[in-house]
Length: 251
Image 1 (cartoon, rainbow, N blue to C red):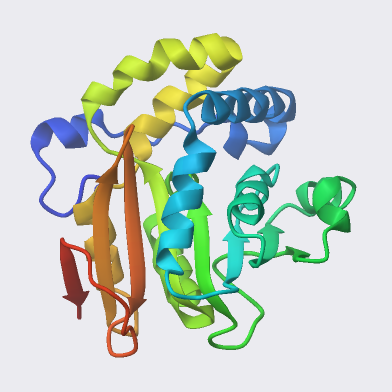
Image 2 (cartoon, rainbow, N blue to C red):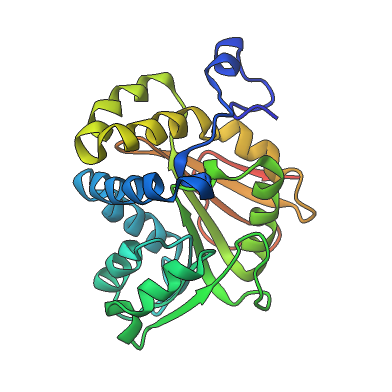
């Protein structure tokens, strides 16, 4: 399915690319490390961690001590923000990379009693149903193929009451931020950033993929400044929380 959705316009299909990013190529580890450092600077500069933190805690509205699962945590900066904004939260910090989790254990999160560090593949989560209030996956959805996205949705909504997906908003106008990628991470990050912008899923694509999940899901999506697609998913017949427009029960 096109990343722009099943009814993507012809220009969107030309805009799309299947070119791999450095971060997705094990043979380009040196370049991938540069990209990750540059991406961290970019996200701090643009306030991305604050935006993601507010959106994540918004999914746990009314829960005094929310149980949160962060998937693909990377350097763990989102979890630090969540704990600063909601000290009562309990966060399971995870990444598919054992090296990343080991690095997190060696840092300040490793000594925080509110944090549980685990190696987790978001498409195969070893946890009982309803373990967390919110599962969140930020800025990495475009790295997954459509079939993997469906498995992530299925697993995320099984182990958590809400699954929050945050990634870039799909529109060519956002190519204008490529110079900022150069500023924060040089041409190496600009390479991956440009590809990422052309790979992000549209709201239409995410909704269509949710229909492929074995359990009917409710999908709520919104544009969030400065340029993010935020998608909240939950099992349609179990979510009693507030509905934010636009919203759809996907069956």
